[in-house]
Amino acid sequence: MMLVTLDIEKAWSEQLYESRICFKIEMQRVIECHTDAEKIALFETWKKNYSESRVNDLVKCAKDKVNRVKVANWEF
Image 1 (cartoon, rainbow, N blue to C red):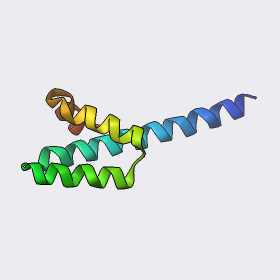
Image 2: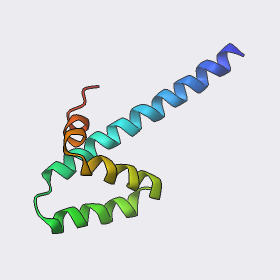
Image 3: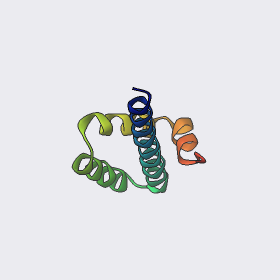
């Protein structure tokens, strides 16, 4: 029983880490966008590569300048 719990925790930990890396990279990409065309192109890329809920989360984070910079500068 304990081994199963540890395996589940490890899997969740890995998923959380990968999600944080994804957000960090994407927020860095947002910061690099300077024109509306670049931002629209990035949004279209997100729509192709991620689920609707992930895209919505990325957009929410990208719209908030303070959070966007915090996420882009996360240290792991």
